[in-house]
Amino acid sequence: VAPSRGLGDVYKRQEMGSPNLDLCTEEIEEIPYLVSLSDRKIPITFFRIPNKEKQSAIVFIHGGGYIGGSTLVLQNQCRFLAEQSGATVISIDYRLAPEAPFPAAFDDCKDVVKWLVHHADHWNIDPNNLSIAGESAGGALAVSCGLSEVGKYLKLVIPIYGALDVCCLLYTSP
Image 1 (tube, rainbow, N blue to C red):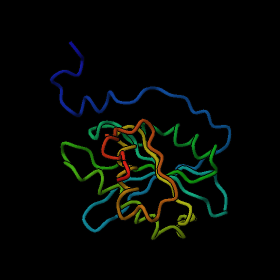
Image 2: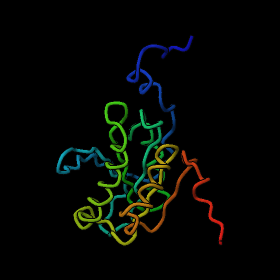
Image 3: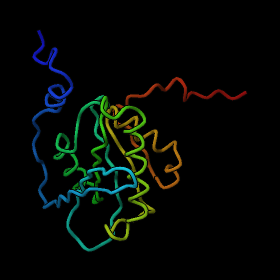
Image 4: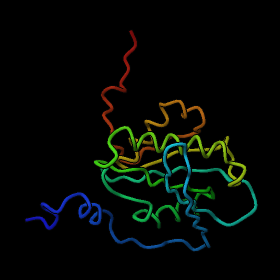
């Protein structure tokens, strides 16, 4: 019998992720922040090499089947991505199901992208060099953001083993 059987979503969420190592060789700032939107607050974390120069930005969306995952699970990966890319990485702790059903996660990610564009100067990021990435469910959310109205702000969309049905994306010319 699986240890999480019958214990509900909270226990399943605690099981998500796995131990991982911090591979960074440089200092990486971690700045937790609570984005205040008109009807809710969304926790995000900035990961960046400390400097005064304007940086490109990568919004990174965690996986977890829309019911789990968090910035904490991917903290070391976000740190390493910031170090290797030289970009500011922003991880979003979007609302999870079942407490927040669809489209809550998508709305959170989309609205945080809009917020970032409008607050780019404050965070010293280049709003013209903004990308979005995510793994699994986060990859699907990244693609969804790219296909939505915030797609106009995004230079690149990177789904990492995204939970996608690509059948609907196939195109055949008439």
